[in-house]
Every structure is written in structure tokens, then in C-alpha cells.
Image (cartoon, one colour):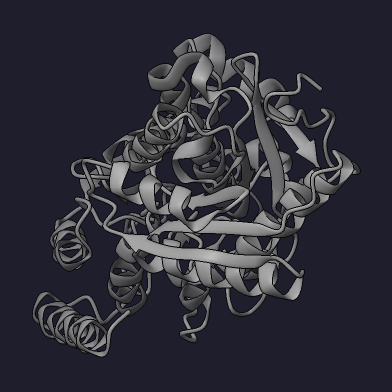
Amino acid sequence: MSKTRLEKCGQLGRRTKIAVASIAAVIGLAGPVASSVAADGKQPESITIGTILPLTGATAQNGENSLRGIRFAVEEINESGGIKSMGGAKLKLTVADATSNPAKAASAAINFLSKGDKPLAMVGAYASGLTETIARVTERARIPLLSTSFADTLTQQGYKFFFQLPAAASKMGTAQYRYAAAVAKANGRPLEKIAIVYANNAYGASQAESLKKQAEEGGAKVVLFEGYSPEITDANPIIAKVQASGADSVFSIAYVTDGVLLMRALKSSGSTMPMFGGTGGYVTPDFLKVLGSAANGVFSVTTSNPDDYGAIGEAYQKKYGEFMPQEAHDNAAAVYVIAQALEENPTTDPVKLAEAIHKGKFSRGAAGSMPGGVVEFDAAGVNTHAAPLMVQWQDGKLVGVWPENLVKGKPQWPGTGK
């Protein structure tokens, strides 16, 4: 990234911080949310959980998948009796559109939290760039924000109310290369020259840097390191650069739309080189719907194993007619963390809820099918059990293929049938 672009990014960040601080002060977000317990001490009939996600723009499909997972978890919890330790109080979900623009996401969060029915906790906002701006707002408001965003910087701000469920981008990038190299070696096709193309935002850039570092340390030559706008409409120029680089494999960090465009362009070029995705769009039903059989053979690192979703995954598929995508599962896990924390530590005080989340171990519902079977946060909000794994599209299904001790399937090298 050029110095001029870095300076512009820094200026945008400073402007966003100033806007968040000034507007939050005006609407009174600096203090805790008022308790929803009635003056007579009765239990609340409902507990408001807020979610803010990109429901319009470039990452809208991932946002919609995330929202579906959140709604699914809320409905499952309510149908099973709500929060029993709070008199069976039902979870009430309120939703706001973060858009796919980080500069607008903070304003959306501020407007959301300025309304009368303030949430006890929030889940969001899928894309790291959006979450970075929203987390400043929720931190000032002292409201727990549980997120499936990857960026390492999210847990490096000293936040007390932010919780990151999946492995951070640096770990995802490291695993993306290490697992790919192990699969390639097992198939007698060691990686020597790799191309890395990535969505140039907080999520893509941080994961790509880690991927590049790991590849170089592993002895591979990075012959192309190319960032692009996630809102691209034509991936052919990028794939042309991949082919010209002489790479033997391509690593991509993308969302649904750009991931599909990249894969289409790669197939149209006649290339048979393997594609190793970096979660995002590569592990969603939408990727398969658009590409069909062309998706088969594509690998991707991901945050949770679809083979382990069990009853949760089966119920989701029965309800929606498609498998449970990673972002739906992991966001559902966030809701289950909140519900279990409330069940074990009943409260209508968001500060006390945050304390309970920091101290607890969560294994109910979808939280129990996160890596390790449990979610547990350290003081920085990092899930200490989070671990990446690799999946592959095989015969129209997403199968866990690496590492061998965490998955049930076996990798198939593209074009070989084995």
C-alpha cells in the first residue's frame, strides 16, 4: 500500500474516532445501559439482543447468512423455554444495517443504540472493517459485543466489552498456508510458487500478510501479492496477473461476490491450479449455488467444522433447506454464549454480563460445536480455544479435510479424483 493511501486510511480512522466520540457524548452512550428490571424487582419478560450486520452492499450476502444464524439461535433458545433462571424471559432480537461501508457503520451503530430499547448485548458485524468502527461505539456504551470478525487489532485495543469467537486473521493466514502445504505434500505436489490475492481491507490485508510471512518461512516463493477492492465487478485482470506470475497455486481471501468472480475467471482462463480460499465467500452455500460443479475441488481454511455441527446443523438445514454456513453457525454460537452466561449469571446489567462472559466456559448449542467444543475468553476477549481447519468442496458438499486429528474427510487433489 502506498504512503498516500496509508495516510488517507489514517485520516479516515481519525475522523471516524472523532465522530464516534462526539456523537456518543451527545446521546449519552458513555454510561451503562439502564437495567430493564422493573422497579418492583420482577423479572423482565424479554431480553433485548441487538445485531448490526452488513445487510446492503458488497458483503450483504454474508451479513444475511449471519443474521439467519442469529435468528435461528434466538428461536431455538426461546422455544426451549427462554432464560429459565430469569423466569423464562425470551430473547428479543433487534436488527440494524451496518451497510458494507466502515465509515457509515459507526453512525449506524450510534443511531441504533440511541433508541429507547437498548440491547443488553450485541452480536456483529461480520466484516472486520465494520466491526472495528462499531466496537468503539459499543465499548463506550459499555455493552458486550460478540463478534465473528477476524482482525487481530480488534483484541489489541484494551477493550473490556469486546469478544472474538473465531481464530484471529493472523492464525487463519498461517493455517491457510500450513494446511495447504501439508495437503499438497501429501499428494506429492509441494508448493513452490504461490500467488496471493486478497480483499484489501482489515480482514483481507491482515490475513494476507500472515499468509505471506508463513509461505516465505515455509520455503515457497510468493510470486504475486495483490490486493483489490472487495467491490470489484471483473476479476479477469487479477487472474491474468496470477497466470503471468507463473504460480503453481493461488491463495485467495475474499467474500462471496469477489470469490465467485475470481473462481469464474480462473476456470474461464483454462487454469487447473488449485485454489485455497481464506474463509469468507468460499465456505457459503451461495458459492456453490452460483458456481455449481465448478466449486468442486476448491479448498478453504475456516473457523468451525461443518462435520461437527450435529443436531444444530441438521435443524438448520431442515428449516432453511441448505447446510449451515460458517458465518451462520459462528454467529449462532455467539447468541448461545450470551444465553448461557445469562442462565448461569442472571442479570440485566450489561457490565455484569460482560464480566460473566469473561469468566465463563460456554458449550451449549452452537458454542459446543466451535473448535474444542467450548468457547472461553481471556482478558482481551480472545477465544482461547479457537482454531482454524481446512475444508474442501467435494461432490457439492463442504467436507473437513485437514488437520487429520480434527476432521473426518480426506483431501482430494483437483483434477486427480483422489
